[in-house]
Length: 113
Image 1 (cartoon, rainbow, N blue to C red):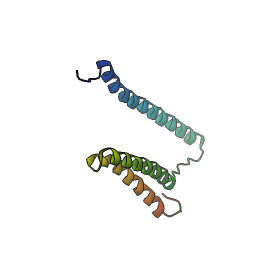
Image 2: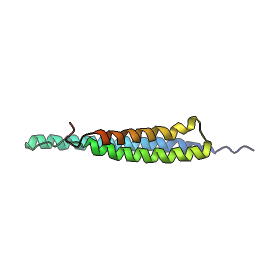
Image 3: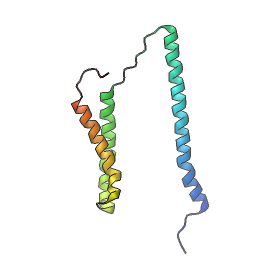
Image 4: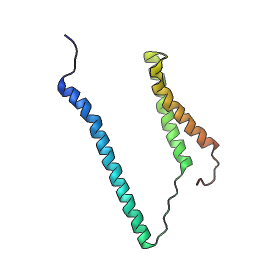
């Protein structure tokens, strides 16, 4: 007898990612709607819009997260499957993380616009 998952398990495995994507899309939609209404109210009241985004700090945070995830995945895949194409699943986020950290190191400390 083969070890085939039941139909209910296959449906659940299919529905869970779709549900996550839909919920994520709804959250992003309402965030953008709220931000738009907030900006329109600030413009209407004549207050100053402060749209400064700290790209340098964001690149450090994203680089550390992507680098750590990539490092762990690379080590895990290397021990599990050895060197092969599946190792790219860890090397790609590792290289993205290293690139973002390099950007953080090379970016001057001044304002970035």
